[in-house]
Image 1 (tube, rainbow, N blue to C red):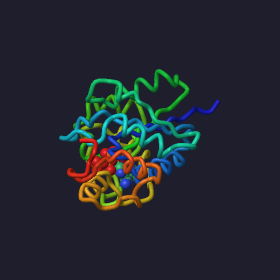
Image 2 (cartoon, helix red, strand yellow):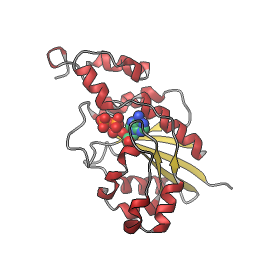
Image 3 (cartoon, helix red, strand yellow):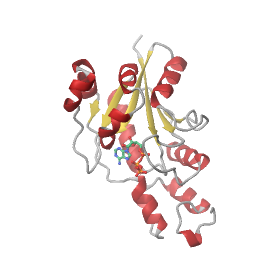
Image 4 (cartoon, rainbow, N blue to C red):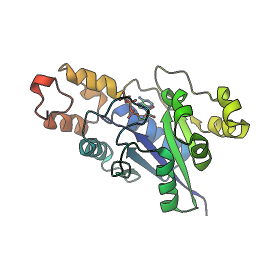
Amino acid sequence: MAKQKTVLFGGTFDPIHLGHTTVAIDAAKNIAADKLVFVPAKRSPLKGFLPKASDDDRFEMIALAIAGAKSLQVSDYELRKPAPSYTLETVEKFKAECGGETSIYWLIGADGVDDLVYWHRIVELLDACNLATMYRAGCEPPNFARFEALWGRRRIDKLQRNIIQTPLVDISSTEIRNKLAVGQDAADMLHPAVADYIRQHGLYQPKETADNE
Ligand code: ATP
């Protein structure tokens, strides 16, 4: 039987935007994955600030953005654990759950490549899963050659093989939060149901009009 493939996509998703869904769905297709699971983090170990929206709101927005797509899921695994969440633990959890017949892929955007050296037990993570790197607008195409002395040729070859030339979608959560914080519209960067949710719950709004503060 052919190996099953599960793709995991971690991030703060504060909020989830069309860049996230477009590239992740493209990557999952490219990998020929059976399942794509969004795994929101409680907070990023490498970001010096906490998410603006609550765990529940970020989870709910992901659920709305992927509603109706059978092969897309969202997991609250990292949200239920004390922060920060480490990717290796999440990968091990999914490996144990899916069984030996499933290959696990972990997606990152090209902007995250430089930070990988600071990831918790990165070498073990590189061996435990397929770290798949996606293109990101405004970033150089991913290239791991400079890490060869650190991680060795075999791991670099695996990382290079797992680079996916995803479409460039020039959107970030920061830009969305910044726009909403000054009362501008960001609906063109969001799934319509997520834009509605943000409006209904007054998320990311200018301070004086926010009703969730
Ligand atoms: P922020 O602006 O708050 O830093 P973000 O838009 O980068 O957020 P995250 O939730 O931090 O979103 O991203 C989760 C993962 O998705 C990261 O690996 C990031 O590189 C990747 N990613 C986010 N937006 C894009 C995009 N437009 N194209 C490709 N990858 C992306």
